[in-house]
Length: 227
Image (cartoon, rainbow, N blue to C red; front, top):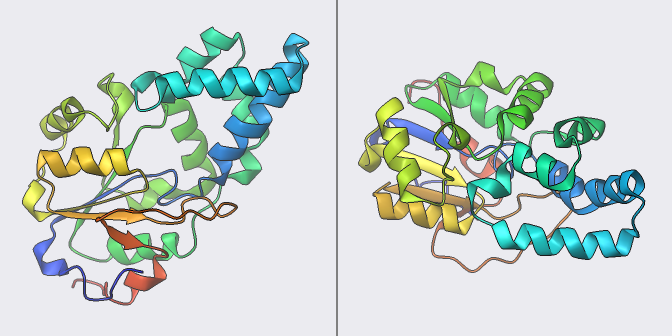
């Protein structure tokens, strides 16, 4: 659990926030890729569901951490399916993580600049923004697909710096993926934290030296307006 005094907000000018698994419940994406997509693929292509699950798991594993792994066009072409349309079929699963919206509301009243930094494809981003109203809490949105490189790569952070200047030493970055946080640390971002329970339906035991946030309620009480 994150200690209440872990971050000194006066030392942070920019708050960089991941979306899926950080602000939003990862259940939407997990359910889509692991359950809904295999089912619809099997239905639309006349394939055995168990065989499809094995095939998709293998293909996803091949691309993990790359921009292709997150790319709707890549998977639509490879699978001959309209991934964006299929995601919309289960959009009722899009939801904030507990106390995440309260965290954003408090940040909105603070002096920190708030930037969404996501690997999600713009089609998924737009769907989630429409459902959640997330954009109202943000000063900027940075999408890795605009640079054709994922957050796991140093090239992403260099490209981001050109369009959204920030001081790594005075920035906080919160994400749910170790590889992404390791890339951010290598780039020099000083304040880092990992979400320990990104998916409300899955318990995760994670071994890491990054600061841990189980729930935003742990830090909301430390973040006061104009602090």
